[in-house]
Length: 99
Image 1 (cartoon, rainbow, N blue to C red):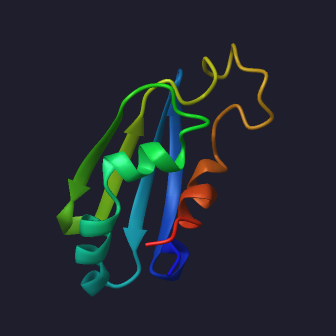
Image 2 (image 1 turned 90 degrees about the vertical axis):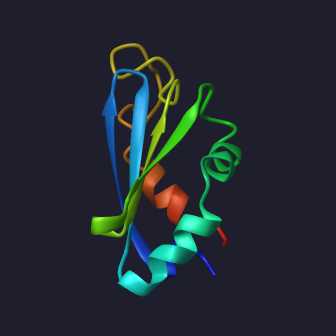
């Protein structure tokens, strides 16, 4: 199944760092994303974009995970020539991941 079937996502940016939150619709699905969506898998998923470390933070009271991806935005908003300088489409891209 794709992540979009059990979760939604938001992104934010600061400089060349992107963070993506992954929030399940139903509390019972939190264990699934905890187990299946690791920092290593997210780093592999974004291997063509993320040049730095990916760190996962767990927010169990919110049934969500937050991924902080360093060197993910081509230098940041003021330096990147990318179409999506803020990386807002990365949340939709993560939701395409099969688990």
